[in-house]
Length: 317
Image (cartoon, rainbow, N blue to C red):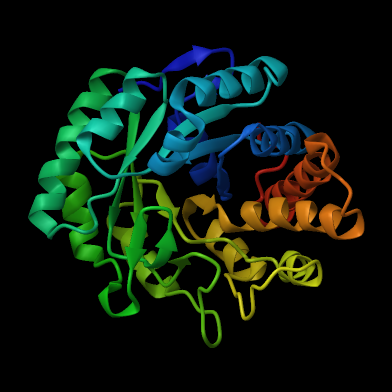
């Protein structure tokens, strides 16, 4: 299946990942919920000359509404025609959600069947793959279970499970997925580690040896940037002990065979920190432009840092 070009720069992730795997860097997939976040992300991508994946969960689609969301993405493409932009469904819970996104112009979808047993995950993933591929859309799936909470995804530490390398090889062969999200120690949300942050790079290496041509995805990979956490708390927030995946570990992942790294929590923190600062310093503020503008700028700075200093995707557009 060839990657589908929608118009100018809205593309599938197929070509993005091929280049990233060949040159040894990762592409950031940033979750979007509203216009300011979309603008902050794509402005950073343009500034860094980086490819970018905009992604939305089913709950984000419910919040923003799919027609509004796609029009914002179209605007981003028109404003930055030289930047490769993909629009991706994050954690699609069922076939119907994946189909809705394919039918509405998404260029990539994820079906998350990690809550099912191995055989059922294969069966359901294959259904999504067959429909999406018939419409020129690529598919990401998940094998293994990440702990933590993100939107509709909620997995306890006891239920978390590393990805089995042998199963990964069989899963890709039997489903025909285009990329695979694996569990090697990351987790969703702002509280990823109680002790020292550590990822199982040995598992990543084994998986890459078995499926060398399949792009690997890391979910739950926000840094939970300490400066943003401190800023939130300084201006009235209450996020004690939040801890994510350090930048140096994510950078190691990006040069060790991971092609796509998901970022959501860091953007939420950036937006919230920017808004809280304005409200604290100027309690009389009620013009949304006054508090959303600095919040958007913080999102842009956060994304630019990831692209340039962590993922290595700057100047790869």
